[in-house]
Amino acid sequence: MEFLDRFAQEIPHHTLSLPALTTLDIKLQGGNPSPQLITILSSISSAPALDSIAFEYDEWSDMDTSFQDPWVDMDRWLARAAEHTNAQGGLSAIFKRWPKGQSVSEGFLRDFRRAGGQVKIDVQR
Amino acid sequence: MNSLPQELVDTVIDSLPPSSLFSSSLVARRWRRRSQQRALEKIKFLSEDQVNRWCTDFPQDPEGIASYAHVARFEDIDFWYDPTTPGRALKSLGSLTELWLSCTKIPDELPGQISRGELGNGITALCLWCPSCTLATMTSFILSLPNLKVLYILGSMVGSEGPLQSHPVTSQRAPLDSLELWGDVGGIGNALVESGFTFRRLSLEVDPWDVEPLIMRSSETMVKLTLYGV
Image 1 (cartoon, rainbow over the protein chains, first blue to last red):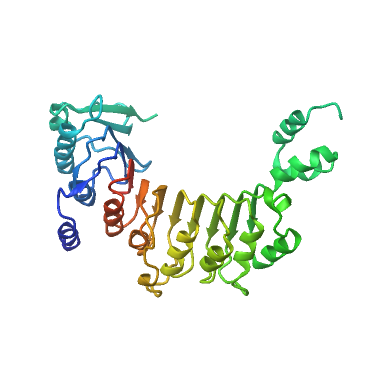
Image 2 (image 1 turned 135 degrees about the horizontal axis):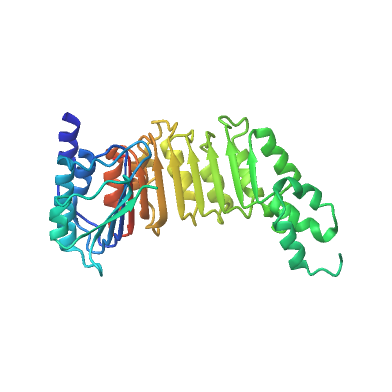
């Protein structure tokens, strides 16, 4: 935790404006987003052109569809990004290699969907 | 055979496997040039001896055989008996667009050689696998390539010596198309930031300490961000 505390102090939250950013790709090694990822994303105050965020899992990781805490933080960040995007068609969260046979639970990324975001699933082959 | 249009001959040669290109270059005079172009398009050097032989056999000639090489890879050359050898090779390889240095020493002399000799003007892609040099040499080397667009760095054997402040930002450089950083790259991210580089696409699999300054520095230009392993 000491590392994360130090890292959080180094990056002031919500200070980074990325006016040209249209695409964000996140390759997750574990099933859930890490605190480091949330910290990095939390430093972004504005990304008005952002139209897609893709989450991809490596072959050793499965998506944890039980919707654990890290996804709550991610949901909050995504909802804020969806509210503030000017991209035509809004913001999409694309999940690649989604586990075959797993449905998307109703509560998954609820805030993001309420903010107008779209969840797209690319099922694992 | 002689009635075949050259374009058709070239198409036939382009469909041949690399192992046949030496034989095809001997079929007829009209087959030679295209066969040699394809055979030498991508070359690999595994020792300083090989580099020296290349420089001797194929001196700089804009129309000569050395000009057929567009991609060069230097691999596992962790020491140069003559540190000017890589510079001489780049002089010979005047048509190079892509340069790979894999576990290979970047001599301190190389950036100066490139700048003075106006070498490497055609290089648009640079790939460094575990480069062996100081941070100052690496940043000077990258800075010395004026038309670089794509930069890929995997791991490093970068020495901590070599103060970065001896290579200050001298001018605002146009953003590079992309940067990929993989593995333990030490302070390379910060070094690139301090050298004034910005990027349009960032792919990062690095310690968060290296991520933040790079994102910050490219905040105005970045259109795509890829984060690995987070």
